[in-house]
Length: 279
Image (tube, rainbow, N blue to C red):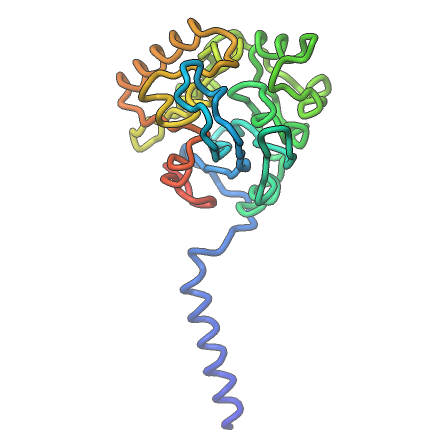
C-alpha cells in the first residue's frame, strides 16, 4: 500500500509540474493562425573590426561593431512570410558571421518546416540577408526586379554572394516594382526604399491590435545612423538613401508606427524572444 501511495504522489507531482511548465513548452504542431502575428528569428551575429564603412562622414571610424541580424516571420490567416534569412557562419577579412541556431531549427519550435513558408522576401540581396535563402525552395520568392538584376550583374556587386541564392532560378517568383501588398488586405506591405541597394525595401506590418510596425532592413544599421541620418560609404546612392529615409520616417510618423533597426542589438533585445510573438 505504501508503494502505491508513493507512486500516486509522484504522479500527482509530475502532473502538477507539467501544468506549470506547459505555457513555456515549445509547440510541435503548426499554429492555427486567425490573426496577424510577428515572430522574431535570430539570423546570426556580425562582428566588425572597424565600422568605418558604415558612415561616409567618419562617425564610426576605428570603432569595433557588433550587429544583430534579425529575421522576421509573419503569420497571416492567408499564409506565412519570412523576411530575410540571416547569415551563414564564416570569417572574412575584417568581419565575421556567427550563428547560434539555424532558421530551420527555430521554425521547428512552433511546428513549422521551411516548406510551410508561403512567401520569402528580402530587404535586399547582401549576403547577411540571403544567407539561408536556398532552404526555402517551396516558397514563392517576392523580388524587386531592380534588386535581382543588380545582384546578378557582373562583376558581382560588393556584399553579394550569389551562392546564397543560387536556387532563385528554380523557385516560383513574384517579381515586383515598388511597393507591394503581400496578402492583399493592407496588413503586410513591402515598401520600396532604394539607396542602400537599387531595390532595397522595408516591411510594414499592421497588427490587428492597431499597432503598426516597420522593419527597416538596412535603411539604418544602428541607432546613431538614424539619429544623424548617416549614409554608409558602400551604399549605391546617397541621394536615394536620404530620400528613402525621409519617406519611411514620414510613413512611420503618419501611422504612428514603431520602427525597428534590424542590425541594432538593443532593438533585437526589446522584441519578444522567439517563440513569443507580437500581435
